[in-house]
Length: 115
Length: 116
Image 1 (tube, rainbow over the protein chains, first blue to last red):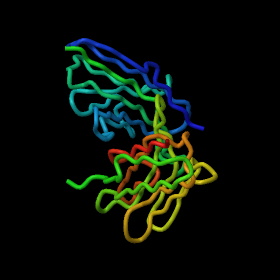
Image 2: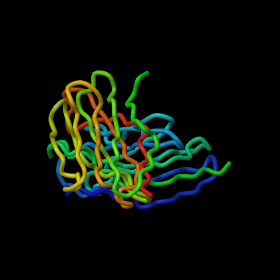
Image 3: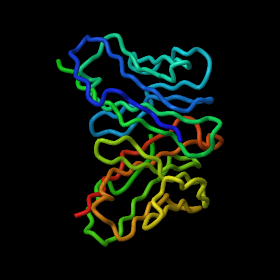
Image 4: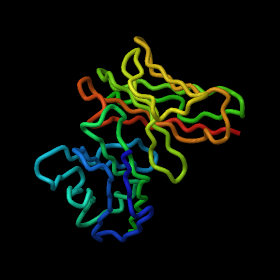
């Protein structure tokens, strides 16, 4: 079965610091990759996604992620974080060729940005 | 902007009672998914439905849990004889026709069930 690992459960940064959140998955075949964000009191929303093509994908609010197939990784980055980036971030993987079981999510990373 | 609507947002039940959680997908979406989030855990897939059909229920507990997505009306996640371990946030998501099992999901704000 597919599994998704997010290495950091809690991250605290100061404003303007650079961010990188790790995500590794286990499935070795063709995958679709996602990062979702959940701001306090809100629903999950899509930050960015990778289906194919350029492995460096850009999402909303200045976020980007790089798919490295050889490392089974899809790390999320942002060069300069803002206080409003405080949220829970979830990496998710879909086995695009593997059936109808929805997305497999990591446990999430709680990001706190200090002013 | 009618996204995925879930109700109730908060539900309190005593052990042994029944819990019913409702989900109305984005208008035009024909795929509905239910996920459960336990404290300090990620979202765990429970069930994937299309209208009047359960496509994949591999994540559903074998007993007490059921789900439906009728031809008319919202999708319902039903938990019978609730126990304390059922306390969690239950999220519904939907996706457009033709994307079943893959692609972006649109999430509701979740229903938080507390079992006393």
